[in-house]
Length: 113
Length: 111
Image (tube, rainbow over the protein chains, first blue to last red):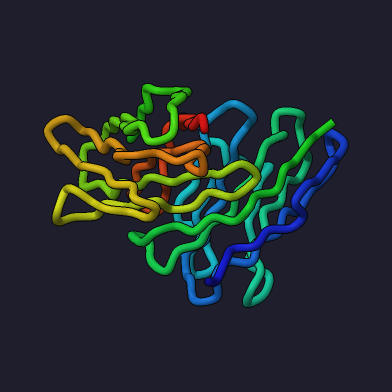
């Protein structure tokens, strides 16, 4: 069964550094998403992406964040200047259609020191 | 804005006990409802979903959920749990290309 994959599984970075989290969505899916889960808190929506542009974003997704689909398979989340409070598990998801089930990747655990 | 409440933060059951996990949501429009499960060390997996039609939906591994519109609820049930059901369970509401998750319920099944 096709799966969403994410790299790296863990990332440790210094405050102020840029990080890029990578995702490979399921190949025939058209909608892509990023969520995050701070330890002990809810899974929170960050952004959805369709047709090479952002379709929805939450208040969390400020100017520090950006998303890109640099080629036909990857979907990336960039955090420009990381803060301590960006430490979280980041999940990528994809779906065939906006109303369809979202399939999640295994997540990237980001730790900002 | 939509929101999801899961009232049970941690549930501990013995094997063969019946399970019901509560989920209530608030949203003014048409909703899509989901239950996801996260087994230890694994990623979020879909258990079941409700978009329309029969309000009693059956999912994988013997789970089912009932959508009760008047109560804004979508409770998850399983008649007889197994040790392998130990996991965290998340209720979610979907609309406008995003999911809103509840805080999750950690289920521990004792052998």
